[in-house]
Length: 81
Image (cartoon, rainbow, N blue to C red):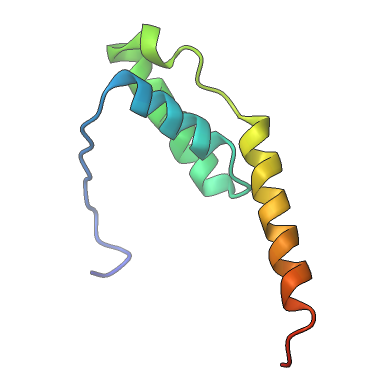
């Protein structure tokens, strides 16, 4: 499908799943996913505010992702190109 085509995506889940999804989106380094997380947070705040009120950037996820990336770099340094 061409990137210029307008599409819609529907998601079904419970409050806890949405809270984790939003926190995960906020915790990435990509500004696009952070923006999607913010838009999702704003829309879900209208429908299920008590479930998504604690959704925020999760420093544990950020730190864990950094550790995994560093481990990948370290383990691949000894491999032939």
